[in-house]
Length: 454
Image (cartoon, rainbow, N blue to C red; front, side, top):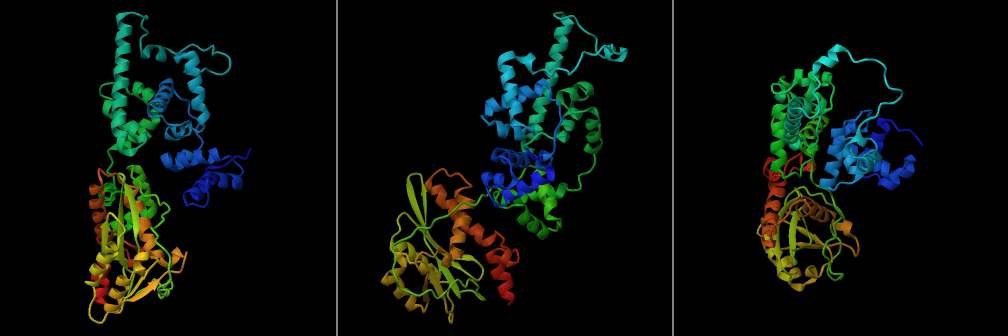
């Protein structure tokens, strides 16, 4: 079987994350199994590049028990559990499980390879802790103290790692530092399963000033302000507006360090379609550029299905700055849904405006009442060709963002709660969500700043 370096694994993972191909597609290209690639992706997501490096750790009995308990309590698979605890081979966990089920705790103890050593322990080792006869009061007291120490350690580890999402050596060192006045460091590092040198390395750095402290605070503020919709690239640009100039890779690393990750995952979107007819030509012809406001508008209707009910959204988007200038929401896709939206949009018109309003061939846009209103306000009607969703790609893109950043991201208590969140999102999209095409401004900021100067 081909041996893969960490760099090669990273190359495969990045291709998967960039949607170059799925597990099976990439496994055929690189000559490995799809499960192996799945394991690399999980390791990278939980531990970054470090998770792709070879690990020769000898695991303690306590660590093995923690892994088995976590898998039983959380119901995670072998692959996901191995990724979380940075164990290279998922089969290692299944081996531990089998040993524990057949031989109990003793079966998990690491057996030394080769012949037993004939060397006697040094006096220093013997004298570190006096050996207590099993069953004596002293032995029981020592066992209780050991259990108290382990309990205190794991409680603090859980507290420290709740935000980070994973237990790093830095976190272990922080816990040991806080407990070293109560317990011996030599015992704490044994429970933490790290070398003493690693602990002292981090101890020296615990009291150093974190030069990224203010940047991290700003990152968290921006992340939560946008409800997890911003990834590291947009957060980098938002930070620049606040006076923090850093490379996007640095921001990505800091976000991983504090356990923040963009929650949005794009999903395929299918818009609501009515009957097909031939009413108006495709005047827009996929020319989505506009030099000024109220020059080119696009519209469409989409459907939401929640709590056994349906809601239909009909918005109008101005192609100049991507702003939603009008919209209506109703329980049924009746003509009033589009009519109310059109009345709102018309209020944005100024004398002399010559607007082209583009839509698909839905039945709403074939109604005489709709066409009559357009003629009354001298609005040119444009329609997509049959079966060509790309003719209205900008509107389709907005619906995709809306469903990825709202519908698939949040949970709602009721249909009324959803309607309120929908209104809040459209306000957020217009006033706060930056767009690269608008010089990293929101649609309203672009309209009020750039277009006003022009």
